[in-house]
Amino acid sequence: MAEVHHFAYGVINPVLAFILSFLGSLLSIVLAARARGTSGWSRARWLLLSALALGGTGIWLMHFMAMLGFDIPDTLITYDLWITAASFPSAGPRRASRPSATCWASSNLPTFR
Image (cartoon, rainbow, N blue to C red):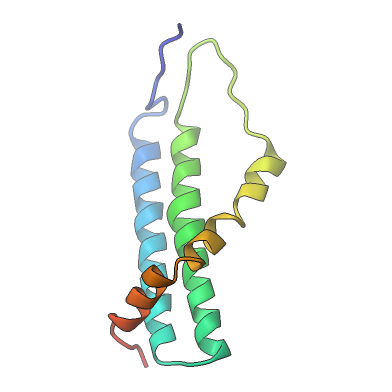
């Protein structure tokens, strides 16, 4: 069995993955806080953007960056562009479908005006 190199390009991939995850989470919190001061369709729009920021930037991009640093010697690892791109939209709506997390975030955060 081949040896797996988790950090094929050094620590740059895990560090970038962490930074992207942090920025996506921060953006999601800011957008959820903006939703707190609105109602109706505007609130839904802010919460949807918050879910996309968390799922898209915070989770999907973090995992993709970490996968780029994965290496197995003498094995060609490729990523299909269309499958990878198709997995992106599914990351955000799954977060939006959890009302308990969304309601908690929008009700306990400061309002930005």
